[in-house]
Length: 554
Image 1 (cartoon, rainbow, N blue to C red):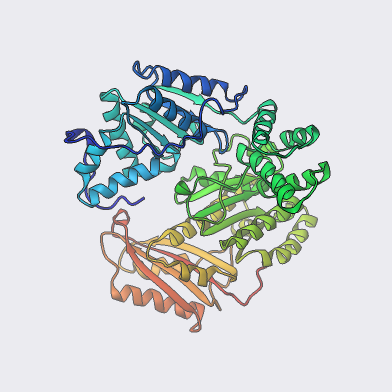
Image 2 (tube, rainbow, N blue to C red; image 1 turned 45 degrees about the vertical axis):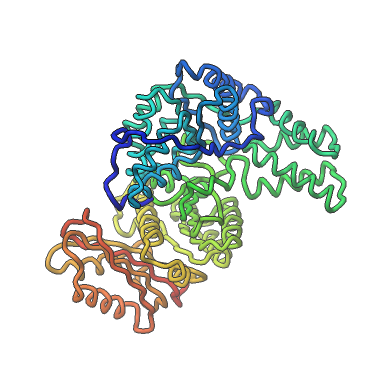
């Protein structure tokens, strides 16, 4: 969301001039009656019923509902809205996503329609905002929600909010906004338990003319635990096979279907999020090393990417402050997969996800590391073999030899060595996010540089002073943990030059371009863009991605 444009005014400063007709955007098919209740969601359901039946008292304002994808949040809030409309026909209800709502207000300011928007806003009595976590890191959007929140509370209007995580796990959210959320009632929609999953499946079957044996329903309920969408998806797949392909639903056939679902989604994560709040870049950590790297990135507060982890060890992903769901395709432009080679599970799973990403026309980048020799020569040799096999699955592959960190500093202990490696990987991802997210780079240029490009080198640096351009580009190309020959023989170079309060001069652009051309070779195709960021002050920042090397990825 852009923070550019005119100053955001406070909605509470504008008086209503006329009443607007509000289109609720509620789905009437959702009700409390068809909400399947169980131990995992009973508390949330009762809270929703209480709020809708005691709307005048405003005892719980706001109502904050959180739960993972497919836990029933959308069903519950739509049901609440429908009951409110029925019980209080004079009240106006609006259901919308937090991000869309905030953007509509910002657009109204930029288009000189702010007063009309605020008049419309003040015609709303009950506001239902989905996916508040999508405003993470969006300062202006959060300011809008905060002002609207204060306005609604002052006028005694009800607010209902949903998120995919608890408040304590909200990153980059205004503390004042979080404080307002905690002033009401917070309820959780937990992962559906077995009894509830069985009830959901049987309820879905009522609307069909197909009979499925009890043992098959039981098997589905016991083996798909991820979320409601996967549960419904499996059943719908089976019903489609019955109706269209005249197949008999056997236990063995069901097992194969579930195996396919779990190979894509996994028992601990599903590859889907709401389209209106997903970033264009997905970063996936595979296995212990990949999960640790991604967790380190979260701690460094990298913005502009969605993060997830994948491991067959529950202890590895336990307590990670990472969204465990992501979507490939539809809005996603790049998928970055991080893994340490030498482990068969990580290699196989990384290849599967990379294959799925490429099928959905995502640029697929692998950042893979070779284990330390101290971890075993067999693992070290196996890693080199796995890298050769994986190359075809990725558009571009960045290989990091962990042993080089010891060459840089022989006194590094084990923990410090891995921290340095995580730092290197984090910088690579941060640079890629900055480059791919930049509005001045067209997708076709990024695809040209990264699509089916083989080995890649990524670097960045910031410099100031008299020779800032030369110092920045030289430093950006120095990456001893990645390659020793810098960018020699690169076919493509993507270059972003960002200045602060002192604009980049024509001479500096020429100096940077000439230096890269001499290092990469005069056959290299350089795609450059220049931007500004006043936070840099008098410094200049350079980010570079070079691909298409003729040298081996090892």
